[in-house]
Length: 161
Image 1 (cartoon, one colour):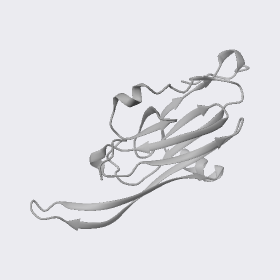
Image 2: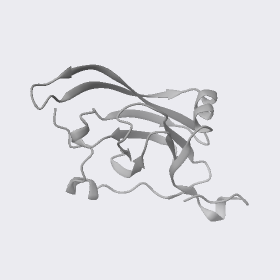
Image 3: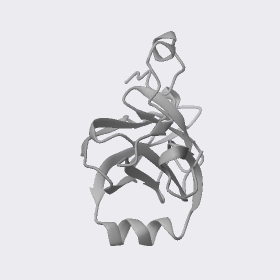
Image 4: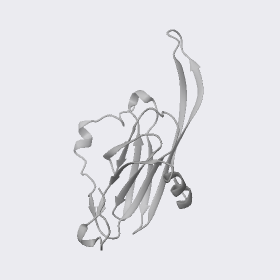
């Protein structure tokens, strides 16, 4: 199956980036990639069709968003042969959402010479409870942060970028 989700196409540059400065009531999405194949490949994380950055295994990303409906997509280069995963979120004011990307290695097969071994990979992305999300987050490194509360609204808090 050919998938162009991991490629940098001209189409993506036309997509309006999400705002990096947000209102005081912004929601937070924590994207977690704790384990799973393809472990040696960075996946690309997109919000509402705008590519935010790459997330390697045992990393997480923190994304601030305005309240409302958002689409989160995680994809790999087409040569990795892993189907892109998406999740639609209805984000409420000042709520943190934990989204887990999990994948498993399936059955393998040996193809004719040059004797290439191929495995199937099953993946999914899902919301997880806060306690579970925080437990995973505490074990791994931050890949990147996107978005921050507008400085004049931060009320003494630190702005993030």
